[in-house]
Length: 427
Image (cartoon, rainbow, N blue to C red; front, side, top):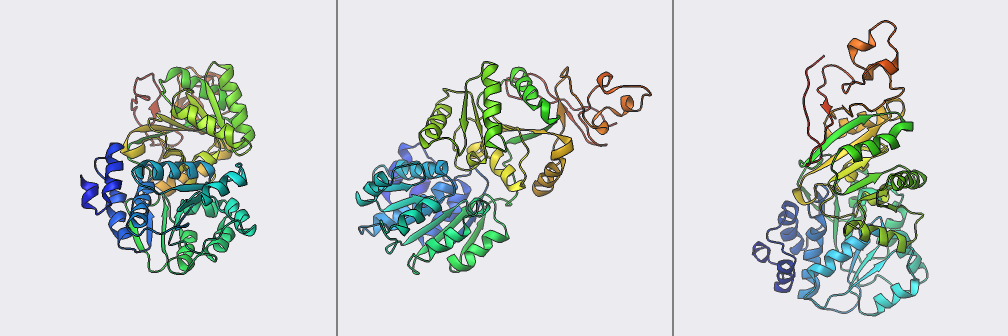
């Protein structure tokens, strides 16, 4: 088994075999040997490419080969969902080892978390805010930490966690190994390296702004007031197995979910106003196909590792290109295939789309659904011949799926594989 050749502990290789892991992903091949040597690492790879195992496996190996009591490893993550995902990878891959993991997140009892730590946990997975709450109350200390991992560091910066990260790192021993992983690395993330890491080895499996090759990306121009209707029309005209819908706001997520439920779909909702038990239930129902659609805010853009999500729908265009990369990365996991559909209001969201296109170096194909009654789209979204016809009203025109010449557009049709595409000529 290739994992054994990487030098991992036999008990970890046994766990990977039980998980049916045959061969490491590219990020794992590059990062694991360097981590086993004890170097600091800055790792960048596309979402769904196996970054969690890339830091979890060498961390477990170090703890197994140098056994000592107490908290010895700290993994900081931006969201509760990502904390749960990281803990699951540690638990599954370390199933034949005695190593225990505690999770420190909001929405859960302080006492239960303390019991997990005093029960012999050696690895701590935590969100920065809740961890600082415990440290300020002196419930435990981080004086024995030998390994620090910053997972999705760019997202932690976006969420304003930089002061918390600094405060936590100040309480860690200077002599430690630090690993930083993300799907996107930018200048602000580099600043963390300046105070948290020592001569880190940089590993980039893909350009920081790339989207997985298996993801088909399509843009649907539509005014905001018609997005709900267009989403329902897409669901009815396309065979979508498992759909993750992203909205910009919590209120928007609730509103979209209600509309979908009214149309007979089984829907779950995930956002920060939900209790931890509600969030866990929604995730489990989605993961086990008890619901077809999960509507979520960007807290679900990181840490959702659900296999076989066939479609990601951006109901609202994200304001930051990095968020788009993480959203659509929820499909086509582990180098699979999937579709990413974005609904764009040209009057308010075109600037965000252009920023995303520049960031990922792609021009999205524009598409329409035949016979859908589009309203109030700007003039350049109509077929050039019709838009120049004297006296033609918008209601009489046919929507065009090419916003500017000489783009090539796509007609949306029914398909068992999601979207079948037919090119049409330049205008």
